[in-house]
Image 1: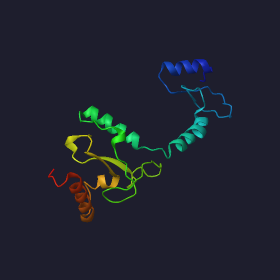
Image 2: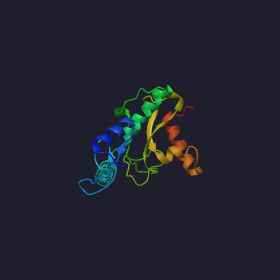
Image 3: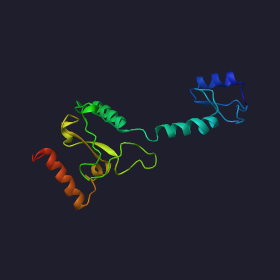
Image 4: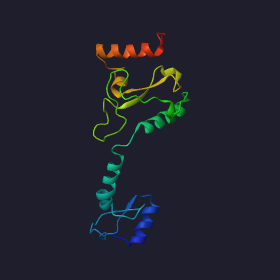
Length: 167
């Protein structure tokens, strides 16, 4: 049974629902549930706002979001985090594998091998200046699954950045 709009909306809010039914068409003639938050038609929302959101965030620099996520996880786990975003050098190429780094999310492939990734050289030290570098997602992943040539590139990178000290 379809309730009048105000009653249906009140019931949906009371029950903690995100949508409600009116049984009446919207201005675009869709007979679809309405959103409690905006009172708009869900089908209209799908056709307009979701596509705009996809376009808006398609090429957004996600590196800053990654930095904030690492910071929050470090705080939650009690890992030292004293570095600021401005202190992280953002090279054009991966210092390990030489891939051109991608600081954006294209929406097509979330596991882009050239995606810029924040890496701790010595994990036990945490996110402190001198211990945080930007490398490709592939280089970071290779720590657990690598060919001999790729491992040699990683070992050269570690030797270079630790000045020959044994970790």
